[in-house]
Length: 130
Image (cartoon, rainbow, N blue to C red; front, side, top):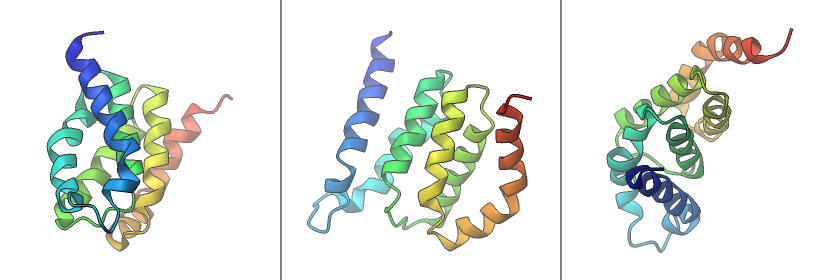
């Protein structure tokens, strides 16, 4: 596995593992998390490596309690996750589904999700054996 890919995977693991601490009330870096996600996690949603797309979804799931300051970033996360729900790789689709769940707490996402439920359900129905 190339070093850059290993580095990206490690980055996701580290930040995801530390999410509860980073989002804690006494965290000195809590206000920088959104920027970090936009800069370093968002690009992996479109990475050619499926497992990095899955890792991006997993990382976002771990930061489900983050209150985004910029609604456009929140909507971008939602769009990325919806794209991953339709990914050709099953592990990416599964982690995307898990990442959707904590996003329901945001009113704007709940509203959008209601509009997209048929599409999301169709993707998972297509995965079931006949």
